Image: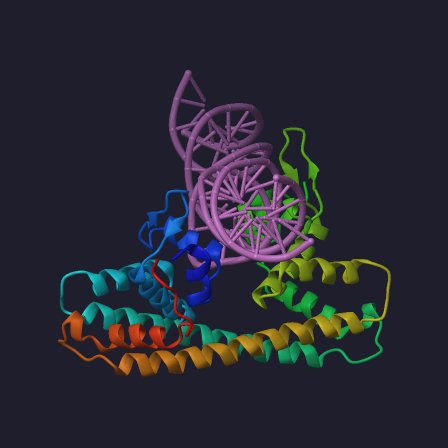
Length: 143
Length: 143
DNA sequence: TTAAAACCCTGTAGCTACTCCAGGGTCAAT
DNA sequence: ATTGACCCTGGAGTAGCTACAGGGTTTTAA
């Protein structure tokens, strides 16, 4: 099948498929006499796997590792478990910091209400004064 | 003050300060006779404000808008409130999708346990079969 | 028959917000 | 005189695409 059909079947854009080929996630397909890429069922399968991993936000590098496990000779799959564990830990860390961010923004938002003018804007003032508070104490002579 | 001192005072790297200048967040400083950048207190203040905004994950483009409000002629600050509201909404959306991601990964992780071999790895199999399930139904003739 | 539409190709640039490096110049102290 | 700390410019690299420009090919409709 040609690239457009593969794109339709997987829901992955044509440019993205070519990108995956370039970075080595997808093996180079055969070529038709006119130079068009000619994909087989193996490519379809592999690309669907890739999409599934990407939807779980697994990085290209990690997908490459998973594909090696999938198509390589059988080994212990502890490394796979570890990969998923690490990814999970990373996402949990991100959730924690985003929640912290959320509450900071909620606090910030409370500072200003409707109808104020910029010089009295509590948000701008808060941003300014908390910035000053975090500056290094050290003083620099002006000369 | 020179760029190294400004970097020390704000905790922002030298390269980053030059980057902010390049993208127009920080006005071009005066130059010493030898070509070194020469910053004044206004730059320090502005840079601290920028750092504060970045720590709240506000984009460069939005910081530029906030700086315009801060240093421009007084106006209604509803646009500032709206900016913060939108940023907050965006972060909340991200938190929701990351939590969904987290539970999907937890489910995935349950699939495989210690000591299995790759062909029997539940994670690999789950990734494969759920990928197949999401493929377009349409069939493509092989010729 | 021909012309338009739809498909494909390569190669390159753009996006975010930095970060790093090469290859230089400048300045204070030893 | 030289070492080391500081500074300069300009360009490349990061992740994962996405969007061209500028071509060629194939199919379909008039």
